[in-house]
Amino acid sequence: MTRILIINGPNLNLLGKRQPEVYGHTTLSDIETMCQEKVANSDVSLTFFQSNHEGAIIDTIHAAMENGTDGIIINAGAYTHTSVAIMDAVASVSLPTIELHLSNIHAREEFRHTSYLARVAVGQICGFGAYGYICAIDALRHHVTKT
Ligand code: DQA
Image (tube, rainbow, N blue to C red; front, side, top):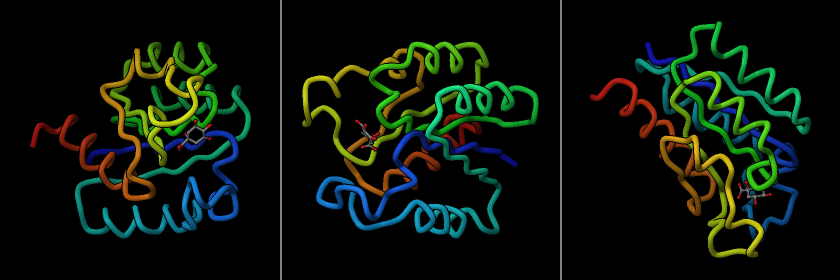
């Protein structure tokens, strides 16, 4: 079993209502349902976590080191562009981590082009909207199992 932790950061609890022209109409709960349906009866299990608080995200990354998590998918929202602390947490736990964004951050404002997480992630998926979560699960499973 490959155990994947999916972390969503600030403002992602508002998906569906928040700037739908940028982030789409799918809610975070819809995304979780879609992902859980994708992995049903497979060798992947998913745990979802969302917080608007940097420290809570860091605590959850630390806990992943102890609770059997095999890899992390993180959409850190705006913390992507600001948080050395979340970058350090990912580096500290040495779990393969995929950076994820709904929007193509490189096609947006200059300040979104910088990602601290990119320095410590296996790779980055962005620009595919909610489908990016499915891509990230496949990519992380492949990275962990090599199958
Ligand atoms: C985001 C992109 C970030 O720049 C932004 O701050 C978000 C969402 C995305 O999923 O496209 O909150 O991570």
